[in-house]
Length: 137
Image (cartoon, rainbow, N blue to C red; front, side, top):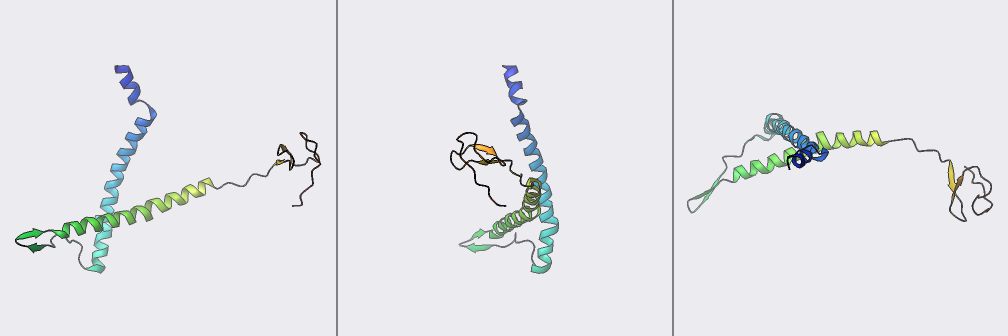
């Protein structure tokens, strides 16, 4: 039973998942710090009010603290924008550059009669003996 548990823990997927969670938690703190310490004050410099926490209204002696909700929605939006433009777009660009490869020059073609793979320079199909018409390039 202990060996099964050890085998479960040392399986590649579990270790990868654990590393992903730890890196994700660290990355979350970096993004939150960027938004809280740089982006929000920058917006406040132009918008005037960086914190809506104290906004409230009262109905029949009940106070509604809608400012905290506004802060949470704005924070979510700003974090989403920062992650998209500073993480997703650059990573997608790097991945697309890494995947670009020169197209392979074909060495074979399909026979128009039997659809077998034959050398590109062949004049006749080796499988059905159909005469091949050369395509001009």
